[in-house]
Amino acid sequence: MKHKLKHNKQNSDFRRLRTKIACQTAGIAAAAAVIVYSVYSFLLRGNFANLILSILQSVFGMDKPAAARLYERTFRSHMDLLILLSLLAVFAVLLYIYLGWFTRYFEEIGKGLDALFYDTPVEISLSPELFAIERRLSLAKYTLDRQKKEMQLSEQRKNDLIMYLAHDLKTPLSCAASYLHLLHDEPQLSAQLREKYLSVCLSNTQRLEGLIQEFLEIAKYNLSHITLHYSEINLTRLLEQLVYEFTPALEKKGLACRLDMAESLLFTCDADKLLRVFDNLLQNAVAYSDGNTQITIAAECSDHFLILRFSSHGSTIPPEKLEHVFDQFYRLGRGQDTVGSGLGLAVAKQIVELHQGTVCADSRDGVTVFTVRLPRFRC
Image (cartoon, helix red, strand yellow):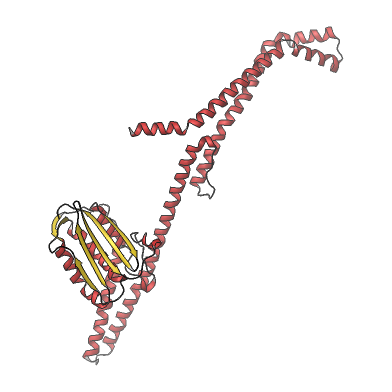
């Protein structure tokens, strides 16, 4: 059925071209008929003979009988050959004109292909009867341009990310090295200072470990061949444990995290992969929340879906940025305000889609909500 509809669409697209070619062919045939009839009449009905005799008499000064004998020997006796040559000349001229019409179409299509492959800024424009081809070429050009821009943007983001992370790697490493030198060069430091310096070294070492892990994420970023291992889990307990692990980060910003869900919510999924999704979403909420606010994780079950919402209070994300938050290597901030590698939400989206679900973001009036929608096997 689809093949038949496609065939009918193609027939409709090229109907105008077929009509014009048919009209041109009919016009050429009519012109050929008129010209052949005129040549035939001119050669065989006396007009050609009178013209030749007149030329011989006026130009060469021959008398009429001598001119008639010369015409008879030279032209009249070879009239069949003259007619054949005349018809061949007419056919060649008309064929040249007819083929010129066809080659003009190929030249237009060739220019359209040049605009497509050589990245010229010229818009593809063909004759009206080639509108179907023009539309397809324009669509292909638009698709190629968009893919090229996306590749350039992705490459630029990756380069920016590597530059930022390389700079960030240097900072904790230098800081840890400086305090280690102090510990090494000053053996008489008090226990209090020694503890403080060791704490700073440990903090920077942990930060360095996290940045190196982000580099590893970039190196192995490929989830297209991941296999999910489903099992039934208590989603409530999973999220309670996750929130508990985030307690230090929450307390550091004066944040509270509230779970709004059933006391025991059973769900079938790949627990390890889904935990990574929730970890990324909660980490993102903590990073961009205003201090002394509340993060809410709400879950509800419909007949066919489990819906989770991660809500946080902070600066409203502009729509032009919100539509890119799930792009790989995209980060909202810059410099010191930048959080993470720009992979967390992209990874989260792919894992959710592997579960046949969706994830989206909404931000308005200082409230940002990430919504995860997963098909419910058991709830």
